[in-house]
Image: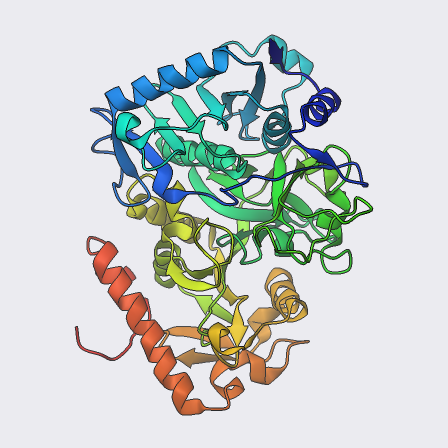
Length: 516
């Protein structure tokens, strides 16, 4: 039986009837995704053909697969789905009418269909009547298990994109995030061709002045938390385009992390978990209440809900030209300053290198914070040469005189592995507020010779010793050595991955002082 664009209530009812999900006391449904509780990067492939071969930046995040193997597996999965009930959702991606794309998602699970209908933009009745053919079709078969020897996959799971045929396959994994990230990866391929910079960032704006801010960062660095500000309109929490008209959200919903979620610290997210919300891997207590502090399944617990569940959401989710850009990084070494001002070249450097720490659970094999470099703060989702995206960012910084800041939401006073504490969220909020209201321009700054950036030393509401990372370490010599070690990691990463980038970007990064 085919269920085409049915409503949330019916999807929930079918999901519960088929034991795909459990019902929480608050009315949300929760799914437990089994083996895969995060993305599986080793299982993602892009079809390598005459169209894509010279366009794709082939690497471990953009692995090639032969066209014939992709097509054979697609046919198997289409046949597999044809023997089961199918749930079809016709969604829209991109709040800008000038750049909006149609994605049809065909799934065997009612619960995952609820998820993606929460995450994409839901068409109006009139838009559905005129929907026509989709721009891309996505086949999702969580219960199908691939055979690596026959299908050419890495494991039983497979995430594949054919950019020429406009097709996406997702099989063998129950983790909902694979669907949204495959669609995001596709938009990141399409949008530069339309002179739109695609970005892994959240965005919000002042409801009166329309002043817009962007927050870049990997999962767990604070994009969702820090952009959910009751004083500002939320444009979106994860995926956006920067066109000549301004900022627009790719999505119609949010996919927020839930670990250690409290009503006091993150009221907007907490209150959005209600009837109609799709939750992943959060345990329920005996009374049916979520235990957000229980990480026994994974720390990568999630909730997917429509943007309209946020009281101060901007709908339609479009904003103006951004006045500020904030790069969020969770430094597990504990040596980066909490807040620094970047030059245009420095912004392009940090945008390209994307230093942070992967947070436990975000990927299936990550169990503790691991220092890492993720190109463009979203390497697994950026299929083109990174300089294409960086150049577009630099042009926009120049054209619109955008201020760019690097904010460390990670550790201070020591390394994460040595028991140091993360910088308090309340302090980070004070820094963000100073950036947004412009008061940070009145602060005093010091130049950090190793990291080659200027950092603020007197932000209102933040202890001065925390703002100056070396002073916060009890062992100054150890701080200096670890800072040099991290700077050398920056240099080695840049030399390995970005040799073709201009020298003015290379010299804008950290300097370890060691000869290469």
